[in-house]
Every structure is written in structure tokens, then in C-alpha cells.
Image 1 (cartoon, rainbow, N blue to C red):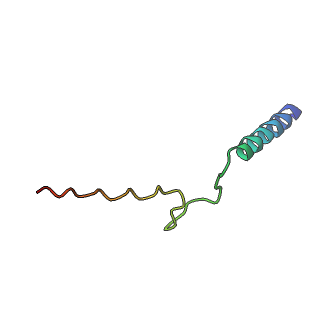
Image 2 (image 1 turned 60 degrees about the vertical axis):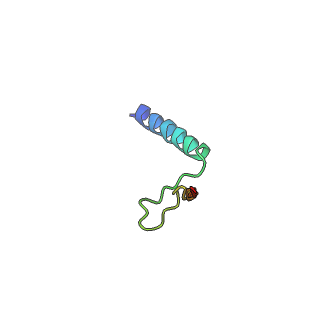
Image 3 (image 1 turned 30 degrees about the horizontal axis):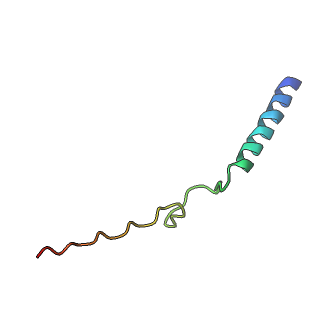
Length: 51
């Protein structure tokens, strides 16, 4: 039984370490309406005026 507790503690420590090294990780759930990770809109294509 103690092996399960030690294994859980090691796994939890590893998970916290990996999440802390991951950078900007949002653990707050789904976002509706506010897209924080959307890409910038593409620049509009320039229309060429043919003579």
C-alpha cells in the first residue's frame, strides 16, 4: 500500500514540474467568446490594377 502512495507522490511531483516548465498554460477551462490564442488576421491582399 505504501508503494501506491509513494508512486502517486512521485507522479504528482513530476506533473507539477512539467506544468511549471511548460510556459503559459491556462488551466481555467473552456473560454467562450474571448479567444486569447487566436492568430492575428492576415494582411489584406493588394489588388493589382491592370491597365
